[in-house]
Length: 243
Image (tube, rainbow, N blue to C red; front, side, top):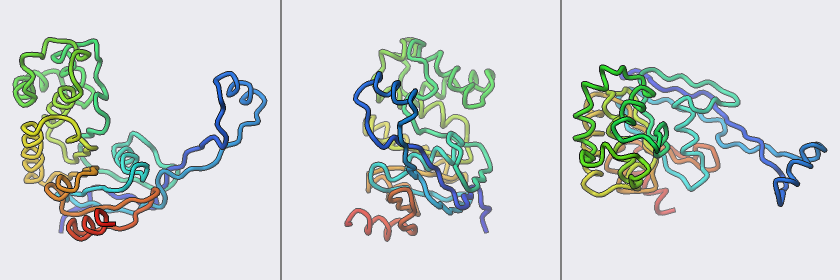
């Protein structure tokens, strides 16, 4: 029986939202000083109980605002839950925000070293993997240009190429196929299947039915921050996309 790698127990994340909109920054400051701004509780996630075992591939679906990306951020440790317990074992590769950890004024080459260090790699490890990263990204002709000259698809290529070079135990993907061309998408899918063969966990947020069904075996359906349904990909996918 495979080991449980990710376990969430009664996890909730609550934000404070302003009840009434302010028409200007001046009004907001004045009302803050007078302490007459009212807030309401908003649960981005509510009572999430989840166990993910080694080697599982999980898709997360739901409407915008359902809590999909928030759940990834909780697992990645970017957010701390308001209540509940999060247990995660192993090295995480989060590809959640396009360009996160990049400096747009630095070159692609400089960003490989910067982002690699942020992901926990040593300079020697980055140097050893540098050619592999550039080759996978397909950005050799642009690698010495500043990132501000890159398209969103090129930034995605670079980010994915760096992150997948660390051989993670857990891969968190948030709509990574929304940008980028079909050739690179196929390379990404191939790389993901290689990780799955090594028993890495994949958690993939997407609105794309075909991508979810191609990559994942199970699905979590989120609605208003709660798990509405969870199970085999074909069954849950059919329920959600025909809903």
